[in-house]
Image (spheres, helix red, strand yellow):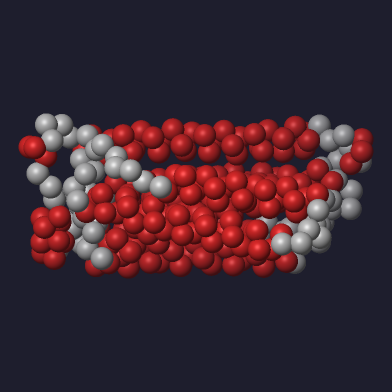
Length: 278
């Protein structure tokens, strides 16, 4: 704990010369390059859907991915430096929390739209799919095998990330990073099991409306698990680098909120898409 106190005391700035507790952002090229990488990603998808044999598609996709990774890493580095310099005051941190809550609200509406489609077709199956749900010819996954295991994994990860948060509040950073490492490991295991489930599937995303909705819901959830795992890895690196502490751990709070959101979405997925639909 003393190392944390020494580390943070050396980096904090004096706000008396600023006359305000707000953070005025300096010039950054990260938003511009991130928009370029997103444009290249969308362009590569459009070309893939329309011209799968287009020459140079692989290089365009790799360029988009590499640009995104480099820009994302640089942006995280800048935010990290701002936090170490003491720019993330209580007012700034409150702004982060409010913004992140609004972001999670948009994510809720995102998944709500897919669940709307799911219940629309499952509660009133069309004649084209045999007036039954799941449609004829669809062999669903057993909810008591890999899906149940993934449910236990995510619920356990929610517990471990909460324990890590409690240890940070108690200035016990050694225990905090250990429980956070367990959370990251559980997230990776979840993704591996989901990949194995996809590879053993008897249906694809093009097999009726059930296949489309199933892979959209579970696939986007898996993507959110991947993003949340990366988020936790960044926070984990901050902990072991003595850059995150009790009085300034808003990044950990946001990461844990995102992870709990992922847990809640999976509970709905498991209940309706796996158990109810089987």
